[in-house]
Image (tube, rainbow, N blue to C red; front, side, top):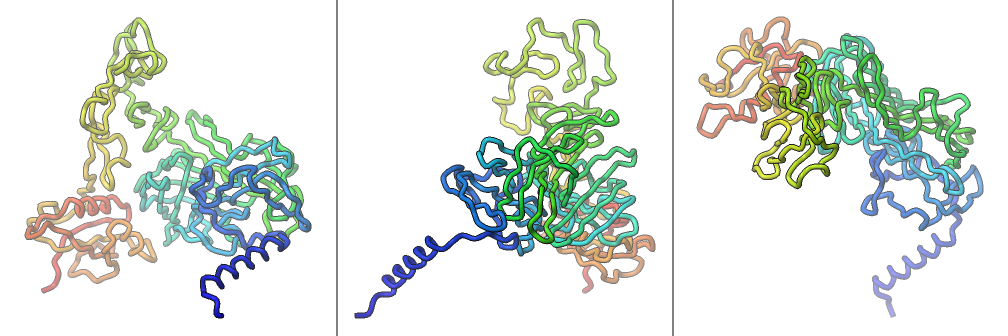
Length: 520
């Protein structure tokens, strides 16, 4: 009698399961690890790949030979770009974008009593999202594209160094989704390096013209002499030896998050993964790894603030809206019994009974962070957003990041288009009286691939075409043709298209924008 396909399949699966159950588990190699899909520095959950309830299943770390059973779970990934079994540029046999590696937050002792600090979530890619590239830049540079993605907690910045015709396409991820203090058109001094032995070593440092370092990040192989850590050495889960989580001479260790002061400016410092082997039993594997980042918002405020450390020197953080606002109190003096309210820009009487937290106030009140007075929270009862009782009500924006491709007018606290009107020639304007069907962007001859840059602003741009007549000046001979979106049966340019045009006008490589028509 012939058995059914379903019965045969069940029998085959049962035999396969029996074979797996009795097969010996050998040591793994760095080249065969899967992508866990866990972002570096984030705790895995039971809904994410790579999750394993501590203590439920034993794992089998190897020490170059026989395996010993332990009851603690193994580390679940490696650094972004590092050789700890993670997918991002590390030795796992496959390329990745460098931004989704899993943390190395496993136990640090066989008894499970000493655990290394969990790494901060850090991600760095200088190769435009591809796995690896070779770059070595230094000197003066300028930001030619910038886009903050708060939902994805990444910041994209294209930086063009003097003497180079290919921008460094930076992608950075910082703890709590912090943005970088960089804006389109910024002049900078610094360096960037990306090297690929067979993992990916990446470092970048950028300073303002004043010399203040505003951003520094590294994700690379590292080696420390005589490394000492808080916990005893731990067995490397891939069988290459024993390693330790060291504390560096400057106090950095895995998982560190602190605020430092340098030259009168505050800066954040974070450390992702930081570990080192004590002995090595594998060939061509880094002896250690370090992920760290430093950011100073002293010159340009963060998109979202948790305290004054996230604001520029002349600004203060509104804890209700989590936005930085200008602080007029730095140049104001108040009479005795009065205190300066930085949000209103005036002196107010000190309350007889001050508050420390919202719990000290009434049900519909919040505690003012400076005056220590209880303030009526009318934002709970008005239909507008954003709103802050400390700022006097509703407003449009506090930062450029709240205006899409537009800009935030800090005085009116409203979004504006932000066009560089000096670059717009003829009668190119939203009303479009000349019924233009397209416009030309004239760029300096600074890039090998101008299309790649311009299409970040205008996806349908086509560069390198010969424009009619003397369209572009000699100083900006590269012409890019861009279609103009207009409202149906009208000549007026759509709001979205005009916003993109204004965004492109702020690019430092663009020198002229002018309208045109398609040939009949």
